[in-house]
Image (cartoon, rainbow, N blue to C red; front, top):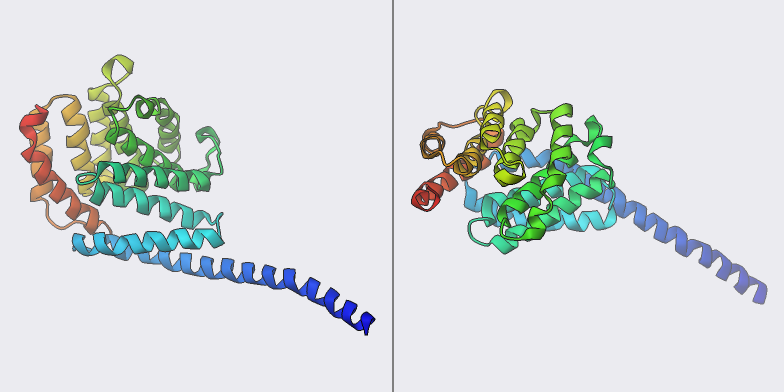
Length: 276
């Protein structure tokens, strides 16, 4: 009987780790299947024009992505989508009403994109790293913009340049010419005495408005908010924001950011006298 008991115990001791491994494997598989559904479904989110609907619905999806990442923490596609989701939500819905919360979302998005890059320096980035490198840099740049009064945030500015240079080398048209727009933001954010250059900023934003970014209204809004204000060019500021307000329907996959850009343009125009 003792031998039978010992034999059963041995079998049980082997089964436990096997079951745990099987459960982990099942969880990881489920996470990957669900993350694929999220990846394919994101275009439907960005095609919405009802901004309130997305504002209310998106946090649950962000929470789902974080839950899935507990089971599959190295899922690059899921990490990139989480980074885009947190950064996009901060820019589209939080900046104007809760700067501290928006900053937290930017920091979280930056961290997820950083995990997707596995700590690699921008110089080592390959074509396959464009998405995480872009969202990591995007989150960092907009976090800095939102926290210009904090020296520790401004100290992060030099880290933007090598990442942006690599993005411009690998894929300058990614996300509606996003690297061009970010380079414009970079030269707008830097103080003149430390390399800031409103003329360069305007030139990069002009590149961002051509080709892949031609109809993307958020690029025009950021051009007005950052480069036109940095250059103290009120005429350009008003022209850009009015063009956002008067623009017709754009591409289906950018309806949400376009709609938010219109709302933001209207609010920014109302602050004109504070900025010039």
